[in-house]
Length: 289
Length: 314
Image 1: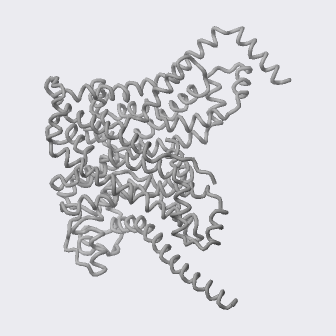
Image 2: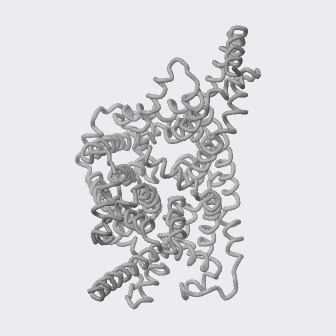
Image 3: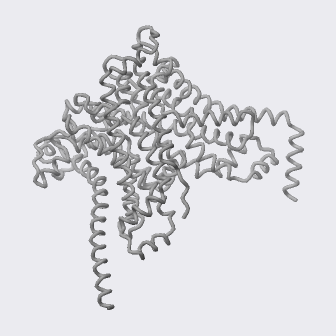
């Protein structure tokens, strides 16, 4: 009797382990679909075009760091990285500061018209934005903000974002009221209370907002593509797009590969540093939005 | 005691410098509200309202705009390119969310409920594609799909299938479907993480009961896990569907609607009408934008209505 039972269990286990094998292969395949192309591009970016055209599977005979130098200079990645640094850096600092200030005012200070402001902001959840692209462009043109990185920063930093407001507002409204009052007793102004008490205590939320602003700005393609017409002002994304357009004439694959690797580096660094926060924040955004 | 002292101190200070405090508050609110909220009114709300008016114009951006009433909308009905683009949108709207949700549910379930050693690494890796920009994902997959030197043909030939320099994105038969892959590839990670969080909220005891009853893993996933996280799936479905209707960046970079318009979608058609290399028609593009706006809001309302969010109790 017990022998039969043991046999039965063994059969089930065998079946399960076969299924497990299939599942593990499946998981591995998805993993390879991500890692493999990246490694392939990395390896090919270190070969010469002639070698690559001959065999796309080959390993570098002699490592060609030249391709990276070439991408940085002749593809103008150096210049567009500087542009991106300015656009992302200033946009991030200004945008995060304004968002924190705004979230504080909208969640912790009572004033006339606050409810109205909130409900107007909530309207944005119903605005897909795509139909506003043209009037927005004309508006930016009238304000002389087109073809300018600063103009783009203005467009991207001034505005409301329900996700950020919820995230920061949630953080700030959980802080005890006493904190502010003790600040006022000590004679601090409203701005000092915000800067010295609220901001340090909301740092985790602010950092999450900053990370998402970074990803949004660094990955932004459509905005820079619409508004920047001068190649000397291109951000990295637009620059790579234009380089890829030119590639149909130049057929310079390895330099292009090197360029793509360079573009990925900042994303990879940010992801390694803030992986947990990015994943948590993204989940929050989807379940609350 | 201390709290009371504080209160008194606060009220004394309030009385002493009430005017000053009031002014200070007004200045603070001005700085805190006006740039963000004003920017929102100016750069978001105002253009949205203006887009209704723009859709009634005939305007190429250079000459004087001409008011033409509803003729842009009337022309749209007979514009076969609009219908073709909408048809592609419809296909994407069905295929892409379906693929993303199925794959991410399966991955999330496996990563959460199986004790494989490599799972921790996968959890981090799978999300990685979501932080890459559309440009990087699009370029990566353009390299993969290339006919002469692409990775896909290379792999096919390695396993003995002659690809014959087939351009996956250059042929009207495959371009539309080839684009589905990077869209799914770039989106699965996020939803897998969301589903993982939702699944880990389900009490273990429910699974144990099912395992004792002899349920198989697939049965557990379909009969227990999915019904229990229905609410989260619904929100995600809404997100992906709306994203597929209005998204066009990746398509623009990889094929720009070609070959022969076989990958054109409505957002891209509108975008090229407004900002493309050929002639511009701001009025007509705005009219298409308005239709897109209506479709998106309708899709949101329909999905909200027909996929009710029922509270789940464990």
